[in-house]
Length: 166
Image (cartoon, rainbow, N blue to C red; front, side, top):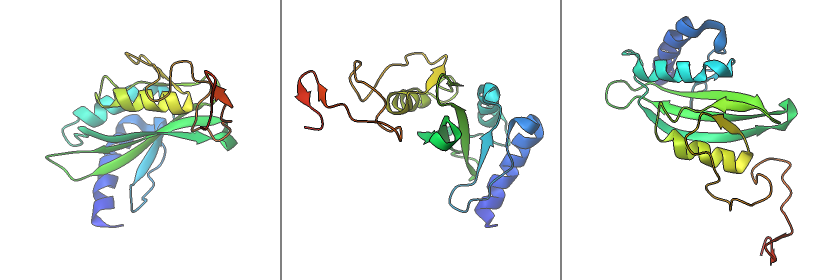
């Protein structure tokens, strides 16, 4: 493992010690090491711990991306987290939910940038973020049909009489 991945592994070990079976094993991906939150109901607690623990201080949510896993019948997010100012560790965290009717707890109360990222994931994938303060479409019109980045998305033929795609 590179020195950067070793630093991320050390941060992960602190998280694993606190949350045990709620998180997966560490993946030492050289580009962005990651782990998965296996118990999505613990996601907000894990996020708060990652932000507030003095040895972790993941104070920057660089990105939150929606994902579609149709072979697993799931949707998910990948959060790229960093510590700015004190440490150089970085981790990606994956959280999944059922594709139909599932939800993921919102972390907009932990990292304010999650508010907009979660709205985009909702708009493009249709996943619901529990306790989000303003979960509504952000890129598509409110009456748009479907979620454009789902792998089984079919583009509607018209929207208010306009041919799609125009």
